[in-house]
Length: 108
Image (cartoon, rainbow, N blue to C red; front, side, top):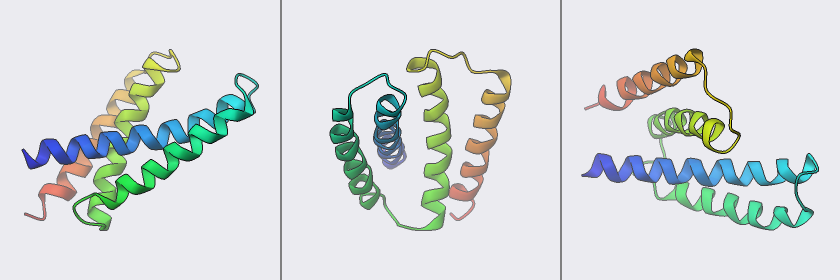
C-alpha cells in the first residue's frame, strides 16, 4: 500500500508541475490570457508543497520522481497536446522507469 501511496504522490506532484509550466506557455503563445499566471503560480506552489510530503528528500526519491514525471509528461503529450507518442517515447519511459526501479529497489 505504501508503494501505491508514494506513486500517487509522485503522479500528483508531476501533474502540479506540468500544469504550472503549461499555463504560462498558453499565455505566452497567445492561446490564453495573462490571468493564467495566477493558477500557474498556485499550481507551482502546490508542486513545491507536494515535494515536502515525499518520504525522504533524498536524491533517490527525486530520481524516482523524475521517472514518474517523464511518464506523466508523455501522457500529457497525448491527452493534452493531442500528439501520439512515438515508440521512442515509450522506450524512453520504460528505460526511465527501469532505472528508477533499480535505484529505489536496490537500496532495500
